[in-house]
Length: 212
Image (cartoon, rainbow, N blue to C red):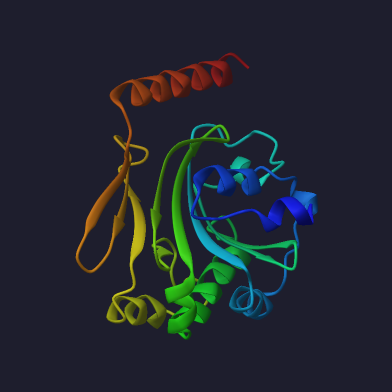
């Protein structure tokens, strides 16, 4: 594992997806403060905004296949040939707290924000539909401050930290955007055919429940 990870560059999408397809059992999950320290001394560091479309009932066997919720903010670092990960998402109070905790730690360390890449990745059924790389740290703007501190959202906005967001999901078309102080970048827009297929799937699911 060490030799392959030593050649990884998170600036290349193929390398990032290689890492995100590694089995979950091969990853290490330090506490938030420890993860920030790992990232400071890491050879490679990145945060990934994972926006998940499609079914959320598939088995999760790698980071790219996470689907238990519609979004995740991942922190991934390679240090000494080992792979470290932390994740925050919105499904539980603990996961929301971790999401805000990591944003708090990044807010307090401007140099680490400057050195941390951001990748915004949109997936369906574990496969990437679209991605975009940003040269510094950005946060995923969902549940910021939830189970943590309501003032966190205001503080990150005052710091003018870049962020990604998803709009329209559920009503369609879903759009994922990166917003910085000067740019509003469209990363992904759901196609009309995707919306139609999703609505057909919902009707079929409803019909099965009625029959059952």
